[in-house]
Image (cartoon, rainbow, N blue to C red):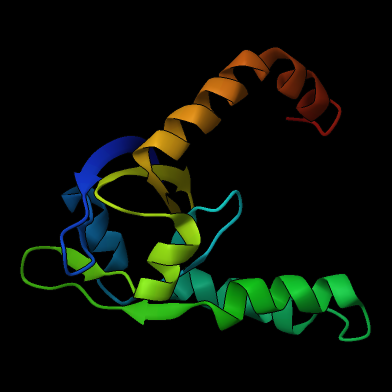
Length: 143
């Protein structure tokens, strides 16, 4: 499982070191794609295949289903680890999320999120301010 928050730097070639504790989960392959809130999602290949199957089962007749499937699948790319535990993020994904140098990698159970540090701090600050209201709404869902 992926949990925690980690600071890393993106190098000039678009390479990003993934925390060592997560590399074993990702050793059979990894997929990076456009996420939500303008961050990137990094999944194990196995987990991404499960998600892709769910998208494939959505009704093609619904525009929102098509749009979200396109967002998640068309922007996806398999990534490999180099000998130093780094992946190379494609330029189009770096541009989508505004990644420059200072990066936050956040673990969210079945995937990692990759954020520009400033965007993560802003998002996190807002979420923390609203955490009580968010908790109340999630309580209605049984969380």
